[in-house]
Length: 237
Image (cartoon, rainbow, N blue to C red):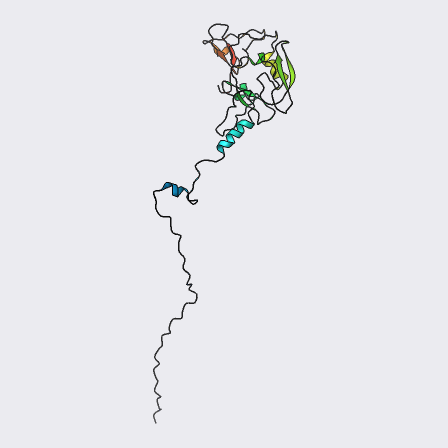
């Protein structure tokens, strides 16, 4: 006897319907609308987004303030660098403190009041009268007294004095005092006095042999022998 075969019914596959996306946001974002094109430059410049500064706003005020507060010169204004601040100087570093021609090194009571000041054609600094200057400082200094032909001590106030002002007695003596208390009435040198030998005689120099002048000096060629001398060079030479 043969076994009974049960018929198999076929199942039709059902495709599931997609579920709604509950994570999708219905919120939409929009980029900001750019400003409309215009030929009106005034309206563009007025917008804070496109505003650009044309210069540093405090530059002019800072320059006026610096030259006013830290001007130690008795006349004129100090030499300024590219940052609009006074050029500092130092007699220890080089002749004339490193200041260029037509300037002298004013050594004030602080670094801020030490600067290159205009000479104003004063001539020989040793012949200038004592000037205590202005300010609140009391700094011990030395000056050359023409009447006694000696270097004397005085108190400097720190601002607007003249160039007859030395930090030490040695500096004053080397610049103004000589073995025979010589003061050149005809001084062709722009800075200091003509260089002399141990016998207090002027060193002779000329265009043929300028090597007679000591280090830090140059041969000033004048109209005659009286106006020809070894003169102290400035810091810019």
